[in-house]
Length: 344
Image (cartoon, rainbow, N blue to C red; front, side):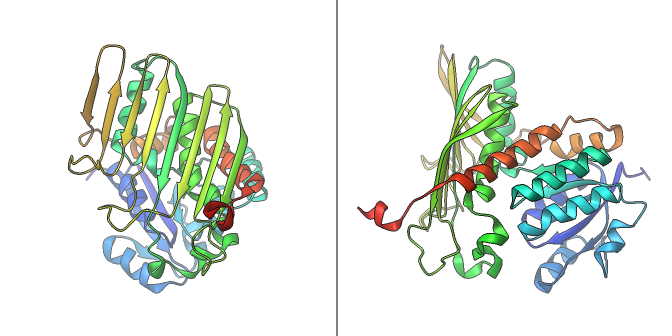
């Protein structure tokens, strides 16, 4: 029997992103050892059913203190994720967090300091890039020079609210961090990745609850304009996916280059093509459609390689933190968008 490349544990299963994260690690050759779920027994029971090989820990300390575990993954409530990561690193373990990994700049500052002290990995599962085959293929095309030098990204992240199915914390601003902190971190990650920016600033941002007064803690709309040393980016995120769409959101990304552009329809092609992972490439010679459903997802394998070899192939540490910082700063400096202004 082949030995597992990396043994990992899970602390926090409050968001269903944990299933994609866990499966990526398992598919890459990791071994799930144990998990801890604090409250929300329905989530714990579902996780145990899907991954019966994992022992359920009575306390989080059992996972943190297990010397055989090298990596801890978490999709806890967002305001808890940074603390879990900091605790993981202080126990000598690497960490993979669901996004958002932070709900405040203070959490980010502490994580940066502990990561610098321990030299452990603090990675973030920006799944709209790392678990989407069309986005992975776009990265390959941009790297090959298919559209020349990237100039700008336009990222749209609409989501369906499904309010009756959401837990209480979903509507508590301090717990999820705001719409730009949360959903916007996906888009900030893609902006940095595709423009190759290693430094960036928030030029402008706005956020508001324009149509859901019954949930005063909810941001249902936000956008931001970013400028980096490799290009610029515009981001819009919202909770307005209509029920007539067949999926939870028509996530889109456009990458403008000096010699062409790429447009992604990640989850649905409203023009009629089935499934997701749609990529459109327009260059100086032609426009063409690329079906990306068979593209491999390398992130899980790369992350486990990094755990073993102490490298940064899956995601540079500075990138992971900077994408979060941009989203946090955009949320903090965002001008309010009122319902009255939208209706005016």
